[in-house]
Length: 247
Ligand SMILES: Nc1nc2c(ncn2[C@@H]2O[C@H](COP(=O)(O)OP(=O)(O)OP(=O)(O)O)[C@@H](O)[C@H]2O)c(=O)[nH]1
Ligand SMILES: [Mg+2]
Image (tube, rainbow, N blue to C red):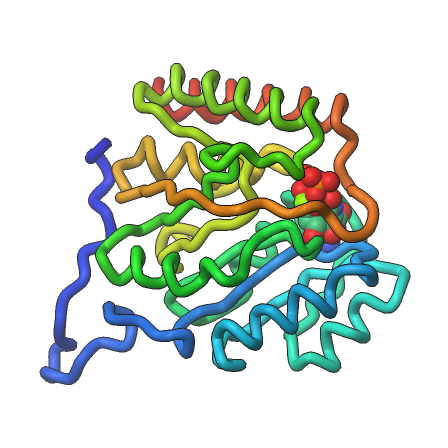
């Protein structure tokens, strides 16, 4: 896990001043980003939670393909809205992770399933030196997740672990924190499987990756994932990305 050197923080710039892109980071250094596709039922809750937990200091970026009021609500809450024709999860989330200038990028879904209360812990782990902090929903059982999806997610983690040569527990989680360099330096190729790719490539290139247990709530609004077609696409992505990183 060490061919590619992880982000190496240095305490000071050439002129001796503390570097803006080095830890310790605060929420002023964090952007929370998401794809949003007709998430009118959830967006208010998600953005209110982010504001409350980060004291309004995190930047929020929504890459939006909605034809409901999602974008309007996002703007009312001060989020940056990037408009994009709906082309799938990964197309939106790739744009979302590449948009902010802040040194830490956190992904989430706009469906109120992920616990924004865990943001301080994610930030703390980045400040401890991790390049990627990945929220593991399965550790605590993920009872709010449909059983079929839960089974699939365990299977994806087993497949990814075999290809990676190290145990990972939740490859398809939508909540992670990344040092900006990680998302900028890797070329992303997957769409529905982007979430798995965002874990597998950094881990296999030697970045410091840690999983941390998170709670997982029932979704507000309708799913945008087709469990069968989407599941097949994710399985293919894991195989392709795992094999290309290995060989
Ligand atoms: N802009 C954009 N956002 C999308 C698109 N597809 C999905 N999203 C968003 O990506 C996030 C993940 O989609 P979800 O429907 O939650 O997919 P999932 O988490 O696999 O499925 P659930 O378990 O039902 O939540 C949500 O915030 C969606 O609104 C798309 O084509 N365009
Ligand atoms: Mg979701």
